[in-house]
Amino acid sequence: MRKLIIAISAIALAGTAAMADPIADRQALMKANGKAAGVLAPIVKGEKPFDAEAVMAALKTLEENADKLDVAKLFPAGSDKGGDTTASPKIWEATADFQAKVEKFKADTAAALAAAPKDVSELKTQFGMIGASCGGCHESFRIKKG
Picture 1 (cartoon, one colour):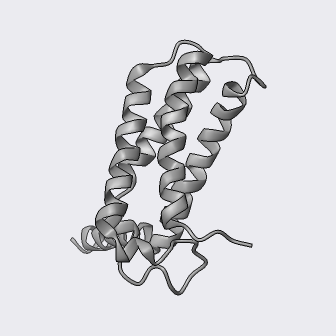
Picture 2 (picture 1 turned 180 degrees about the vertical axis):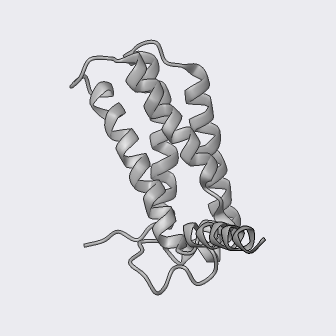
Picture 3 (picture 1 turned 90 degrees about the horizontal axis):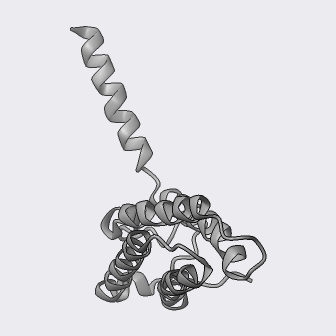
């Protein structure tokens, strides 16, 4: 019984620790999104050949990460302070608008994945939608460093 209680406590503590730092958690998501976009951008620019498998993997990553963008958990009140963050105070001043932009990103990434682009032309359309969603949020709700 004691081992069971210790095991449950350890699991609960690990779960709490995983989401204990919303700044680090949201930065990890954004870095993963950047990495996925870094796979797609050279293909869209014609710098790399179209690779359907790599495209779908990157789109799947973007869509999965979009689903993890929980505004309440990743952007709790006060998480614009006390850490190395570029989150703008506008997030907490205009939460409904921020949430709407997150929902648009979720819809755009889901649509891109569902479209399963078969060539560069189709990918350009899907990547353009995703890029516009990212840019719209970053322009309004992110503080530019340097």
